[in-house]
Length: 193
Image (tube, rainbow, N blue to C red; front, side, top):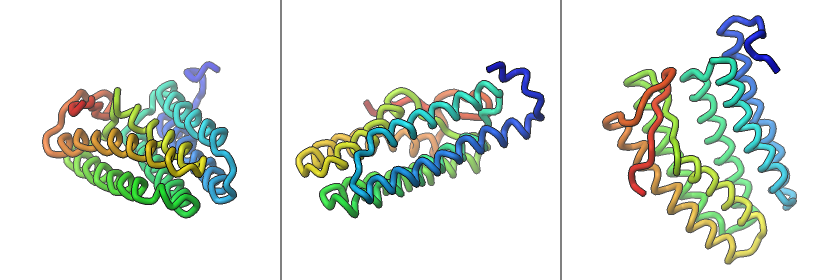
């Protein structure tokens, strides 16, 4: 599709991109339903991850990957992770401590990013291992979805160590920004690994 030929204003394009981002919450609702019904979540998780990639691509194609869209993206990610974690911890008690740690990590990172945004007007985007850290949470959810306690503990410990450890980069960025800025978004690279 030739996105450049879409005759919308910049604000309309931004609203379209943000709407695509917010639409992922519908997939989150399906994911939670699958977890509660103890269904396999691999397909729904795959759709969610594909939609996460697609909404970012749409925003970049429309040239509206703005700080506001990035903030919406981060909010959807946090709400989705928290909601799925809460649902999973109800059906797999072995996952509770790991999801609690990951939830606290997200509160800290979201707070650090909010401080950075209020100071600079820049959204924050992790790169490299930060993407792998997010994927490790998805893999942990898949492991916990098996109901196998050993798989849950191994996947939980690995995800918590990687994803939790990367939080320091966001905290450091709130204290003193690092990385580079592009279109109002500060891109930070992992420093602790």
